[in-house]
Image 1: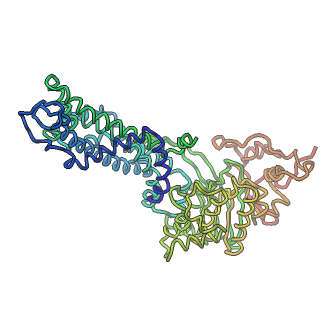
Image 2: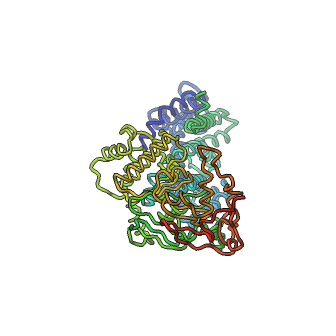
Image 3: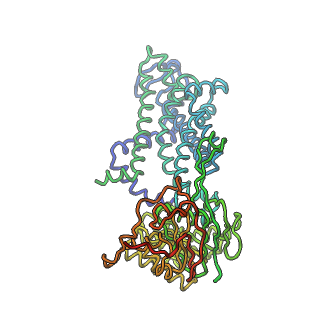
Length: 288
Length: 328
């Protein structure tokens, strides 16, 4: 598989570089990842340090993005917020993708009765209204990062599983899988060596396009007070604090909204560019 | 002549059923008969050509012979032993190979040729000192350069992909290779190369082949015996030379007459088959071919003909074998 990646990577990078939006997306995502990784080095202050005397300070050389209602440095809180946002979204999409992949492969390749049961489960979960379901689970389990990740994973699994199932179903009837069966290959070998490499690429693209959705979901739930608990900085709860103290300092809402908008845009552009770069039909258009 | 693979009275029914949970639970099925009473035998080192139109059940026959398709009746014997259980099929698969109609589609798209040709050995856990060496050896046996081992299936030409499939089929030193349309989609010159490769392997390795095709000229050229299939029924079997010289079944006669002739005046237009092959869902009663047969009588519509032996090792299923149509 790594050899496949190396074979295609050059053309993928070239296609990506030729697309200005994709390049912009990659840059934005890169910046946010660096921000999240090196938060302790980049943040000028401790994001939790309260300095009430300095509350609602505007942007100045001392506090580049001003301070919040408790005098905490907003820039530092936003940098640490990137950690929260990326951490939760990567963990949640990664887990949901892995579980969805497994269930999808089982449903698509396994016996028909198991497929019927799994599809029924996927349909049941995805028929629930997303936010209502999230609020119900959080109310029962209590708001925490773990609950948040759990809820996001539960909500996202059916989509990935159904996508993988559809791919697997069409592949399982293809000649090369038949050829493996004639050679007496074990089911495990067929799934791991032949089905998995052929479905995982597209799943990764879908996952990268879903990261902004999860970032928004995390911010939204944190805004509502159902996600990340204060004082841990999250773009969602900074936004909420800003909304509450909009009369004192209109700047806070902007400071928390900007990274949210930029991160979402960045991941969306990158995901779309990746999809175009990996899709051979669209590649022809680029060559022209 | 001892048979390497002997199929007798094989029949295959397909179940048309719904896919949902409810349909699975209720189990209401519609049975479609695909193959019935197929008797075929392949001797060691022999090439058997199976000829039939699209939809005649050629591919289903090959699939059921390898255990990819559940059968509803009949027996199959490989090397004198009955093949019925999963372990029997495992034994059979160690000694046989199947070449698909579309060679590129039968190669796993994310694996390189080198890994693909030695895959049967890996699956069977055969000891292999050096996989790359073995791949090179197998590729050279089918006349491909070793450098091709680093390519992906979609980077191969049709002829190369076909050769890769032959190399992979030979990896386990099988005794029987079943090839589904081995020349489909190839240039005439490449077709010739592939056929020469196969006949060469038959001579040097004593391999038996079952070639499924609708190309009569090819079958006439390479196969020792042929079997004519029509709508899931075996019409005629026998040594190729005999069958082509004295076709006993009206269907065989029409098929042979439909071959292009160098001299167009010699073509027998009067033997051309009329109409379309009937649907398996609306199978005609009696003889399957009576709806298009020039010799059809009342008996053909009511009674399914039984196999009859004819001189020269031929077997035919027709009420009026070797009867020439009245020329007007």
